[in-house]
Image (cartoon, rainbow, N blue to C red; front, top):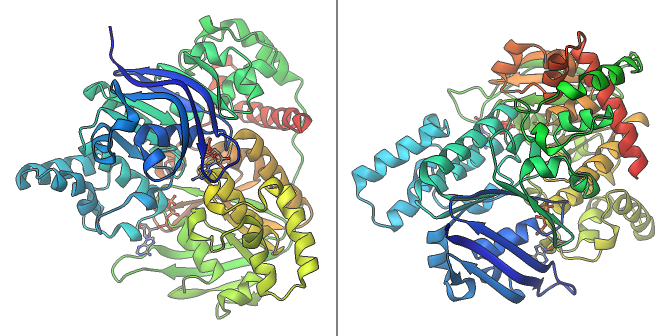
Amino acid sequence: MKKRVIEFNNYSFKYHSQAAPTLHDINITIFEGEKVLIVGPSGSGKSTIGHCINGLVPFSYKGEATGSLKIMGKDAHSLDIFSRSKIVGTVLQDPDGQFIGLTVGEDIAFSLENDSTEQGIMKNLVEETVKTVEMDEYLSSSIHHLSGGQKQRVSLAGVMVDKVEIILFDEPLANLDPATGQYAIELIDRIHKETNTTVVIIEHRLEDVLHRHVDRIIVVDDGRIVADMCPDKLLSSVILESSHIREPLYVRAAKYAGCDVIEEMKPSQLHSFSIESCKDKLLDWFEKANEAVPKEIKLPILQLKDISFRYAPGHETIKGISLSVEKGEMVSIVGKNGAGKSTLSKIICGFEKPRSGSILFKEQDITGDTIKERSFRIGMVMQNPNHMISKHLVFDEVALGLIIRGVPENEAKKQVEKVLKICGLYPFRNWPISALSFGQKKRVTIASILVLEPEVMILDEPTAGQDLRHYTEMMDFLAELNRQGMTILLITHDMHLMLEYTTRAIVMNKGRIIADDPPSMILTDSEITRQANLKETSLLVLAKRVGIKEPKEFVEHFIAYDREVRRQWQ
Ligand SMILES: Nc1ncnc2c1ncn2[C@@H]1O[C@H](COP(=O)(O)OP(=O)(O)OP(=O)(O)O)[C@@H](O)[C@H]1O
Ligand SMILES: Nc1ncnc2c1ncn2[C@@H]1O[C@H](COP(=O)(O)OP(=O)(O)OP(=O)(O)O)[C@@H](O)[C@H]1O
């Protein structure tokens, strides 16, 4: 009989600062060597479950717990934080909160040094691990100079060197480009198989996690466990849909086409999904598709001319980039981790000065304008919400920009409330931001820029950490702003977002633009997808397997259909 490593028994938890419990009567048992995925809408309590496992609750976040929680058979509350950290290793959602060392190497070596590991062994272990996550080039780089995705890889390496019993991943894919995300899932799978470590993954990107087998999926909704079953069974049920969690796209497509997806069809992985019985229905559904709407031609609003930039001599981060964005466009910027996407947006907003080249806004040169001057025209929402937040309360944070601009209090209040409602944050307006989940914080930062109504908005990973309902609300809201004339640039690793919401994708690689085309064209160009670490959508693979001759149109049909279904939910 396998050992029980994590056992929640009728466990409830209430944060001190909250009036009501966040977790209600939870029962979960995880056995030695299992690999379990936890999914649920934003704010449902997934990270709180993670905190209870790794000890952040009660050591960092105080509250009241009832029921029992055992880790490795011991009452969790009897384990101090040090013994807990020797059992549970965590890769956090926000890797910035996790780094200790100054350089990549020091950080990875930290826990080994703490355990007084012999120097030679330590050096080998660190070098080997850093290679596995493909960060060997950066061994002596400062952590703070890495891109978001590179930081994620370093924290992965950090737990890999520790020989813990349980590894907990809290949204490990949030900042990773599609190919790196896939690679991370393969890596987690390899670590799991080779070490027999118990693995718990909390992640919104269900389809991406299912790239490799998981034993069970636990669905959390509103602090309660609503399902705990094997992936094939879950995907053949309506549980994910009713909890507003995005199912794998190929499963959704099959359901839209009227196929009865059952457990025996093994829907949890695309390659094992048996579609023989659905082929006719999928073909039929596709044949009834509408035509795509042609694009209008508009005026340039933002132009970059031959922009070059480097953080330090010897390495150009941006290499002679030129591009033009038309008024009213919604464009995605995609590419490998570290390609220079965030850097480019910082240059556009004036946070970094280009070494050469110029930036034009409505054909006026704004290269010499200050950050504040540009902020009236261009707003930017950064990747990590913790880098943008400066106030204690949600309302004050969103109002800040208007107050600085001298907007009268009454007027500011009206505008802030309107934006808070749109962003689903109105009920939280008087909350301290520290009591929000990651996804909720991300929405606060989007609200704080939206309220300023810039003409161009750049959003770095706007939907990272958002569940499907908030993803849809946020993206539909951005699409509506776009219809009203706002120009939007989205930096994203979400290939489906790029396909669904943007008409044009700019692909970056090593500081250059390597493609600038409609998204469906980019995802069918294998050379570009390979160079930029992108990933074909599972819908294309499904269409090809069904024998559809126009797989791109199948994807477009799915997008239009899916959008309509989701609009009906709201
Ligand atoms: N430190 C804290 N203090 C008080 N309340 C908190 C704290 N952390 C989280 N909460 C509350 O608990 C609820 C669940 O948050 P949690 O972070 O567990 O959700 P989640 O499912 O991981 O969400 P997301 O997908 O957005 O990260 C939220 O409503 C949040 O406000
Ligand atoms: N402040 C900094 N100092 C030095 N180098 C930096 C700094 N910020 C970023 N870099 C480097 O510049 C390169 C581009 O980083 P950038 O953050 O623009 O990439 P990105 O395409 O946005 O990546 P991701 O998808 O991982 O967010 C990376 O190699 C990174 O290490």
